[in-house]
Image 1 (cartoon, each protein chain N blue to C red):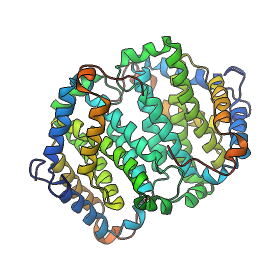
Image 2 (spheres, chains in turn brown, red, yellow, blue):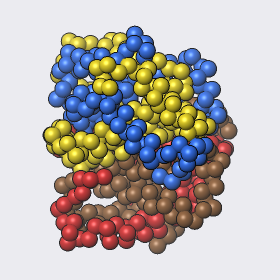
Image 3 (cartoon, chains in turn blue, red, purple, orange):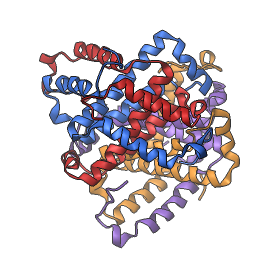
Length: 119
Length: 119
Length: 119
Length: 119
């Protein structure tokens, strides 16, 4: 089922079932899940470590590498969805609420083509 | 719109529009986006840094903190969705494909209540 | 040569030589090195992912695991020393300067036995 | 005291004293310290997030930014030294031991000017 017809809730259910079948809930504290998320984010990053920005765009044309990258993205997503489950956070609502805040922080006129380099 | 009715594609569209309106595509190479994702994962982690696993579960009962955590989760999600956009990866498909691999790697009978500590 | 007699400069020299012999300088931009550092920090973190704080202290009594952890710490250190080389930063000076700032931020009387949970 | 005359042990002592004066040892489990290390690595990374490899080299010529970067590097170093303290690991020995392993893994002749892109 592709992104066009898959709801976030159905993905959350799949992640919940996977953990429940294995009785992994005791391990899935928020603290552990965010650590796991950060670990997977780093594994994803590793695929783009020694190449420059331009070369990183070309990864989209390399099916074998793209599948590895997709696997790491899936791991990141699974931890994020699992965290939403454990904390009872609606992820879609959170994304939309944050986007409203970011739109105020980065108004279109002032942000066009410009990016903060400052952290 | 909550997780129950929001498709992944609609979130991807929102993230794509946000970047396009600001002409941020030149900054959004896969390399930069995975770095941004890792940075946001760390900011999320920071909320659970000095507490232990049990206390991290209690965050679910603290509305003020929960909103901060939700904001960071939204940032992680936005980078992940943006990366899916740039690389042309269907995230729902990727999650389901990875879950099949993980089910083979962690069979229910052998994994029940047990977790690899080894990386 | 142990920590008691090893200067930071001698470690920096060893890291510089290692990269120079392999002509890796073109890869070692600050951007790449900080990414590598974050990747290694995550690999280090992975060793402590599914255990709680108490159990993480017991790792000190497990020689086999301790060696794996030491290897990851060495990787983190090598990237940090390499970054100091590339940017021309004196790491010892930086640590001492930051400690002065932190001492002002966390005065002994106010900080004793207390820790900020807030990021 | 600069890198040329500062031993790793003296930096470890300074980090140990800083924590001891504030009675922070109960917070400084290995699990928490590696999380803190990863958080600081991400803050360091943030300084190089939206720039490309070439521009990241120019940071060395920007004194104001360099000081910020040095501060983040000091934070990374302090967590790493604190972890060495808690686990009883000699960091200099670990770095040298790992370098021997890496020299075997990346022989000079085969590695010259080449870098693995694969994780």
